[in-house]
Length: 428
Ligand SMILES: Nc1ncnc2c1ncn2[C@@H]1O[C@H](COP(=O)(O)OP(=O)(O)OP(=O)(O)O)[C@@H](O)[C@H]1O
Ligand SMILES: [Mg+2]
Image (tube, rainbow, N blue to C red; front, side):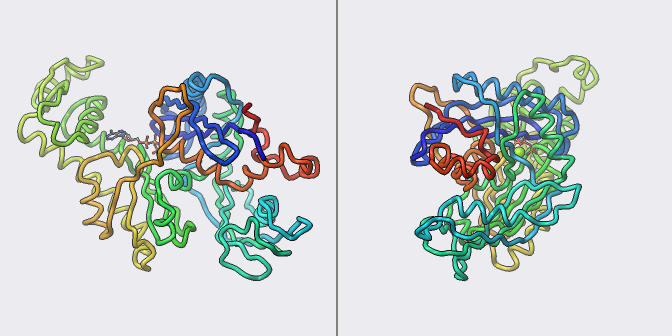
């Protein structure tokens, strides 16, 4: 029986970096020990463009999470956006190693490792190997063969590859922040683990993560991913439109947008300037870093104007999502509709608009309920970073390296460990 392990998930977004540190118990129960976030400016459309800025964001988020956890982590599992990724179908084969022909996670990992042996172009790096189905002695359609009996284990998998250069830049940023990359996790896979129900994934669902600068899309059918895509638009574009349309500084546009979420309670919302004032004194306003301290509710008419600005950009984003997901929906692979996640999706009217444009039901994704370690004050937690932890905990490589730590066959497995090995440490 394995002891406790610590798992740290790091999400590097175009607006902020978030980290979640969790303890994984013997029964794979997850307890949150710490969480931290920090603004980050070093990404453009999902790609690192300023290593120092990203490293600074990582360092700050990690410091907060570690402070809350009460100890330092050395390595983190890092989310990679589904930007410029490609995927390939592949098959791996392994002989079942146990004496009684019982399939273990070790066999599953060997089959997945074998599936990784494919020609990877020099400008590509493997992010994940996602099992589609296992085949035990020729019988396919198996989701989890652990504990089954057989001699030959095969796996049909999808290998996700990212741009080698972008992975290297993310790694350089993590290392510059004093941490090591324990493993990569495709961001939409992590988000899916945080907000989708297994039944939805089984019947067919589309996940739409509207972030700051990008919107990531994944579709699942019969439990497996059938589509990864992205479009270069997100919440930052909505904020920019508000700033231009309402003629207010970006900071204020952001706050106006966030206030919109509190529909109904918006009447009487305190904002720093109204459009009329901004129009009159736009030049003066720009000279003052924080704008004039005018507090006022948006007058009648301004509300509608703001609504129209937001709706126009949101409509554009959803129309792009429509194009990307048309095939999946057309084939009837998404009866459960669309589930939204990501900060950019927190704008009113999104579900109605999605229903109109995509013609399927839509809901907001709510992350699974987390358990905080007793004695720790529950804090705000990033869905994306939480999803990375959840994904890692379900990962057979992680399970294997954890189980073999105290196992007598640990020595024998020294060669195949590695991916998560540095990352897994006894918690007590
Ligand atoms: N309460 C809110 N209401 C409206 N918008 C919000 C709210 N909170 C966050 N946002 C918006 O969400 C966006 C950031 O979302 P998120 O944190 O998911 O992105 P990210 O992961 O940093 O970026 P990306 O995924 O594009 O790399 C910003 O544009 C921000 O304005
Ligand atoms: Mg994101």
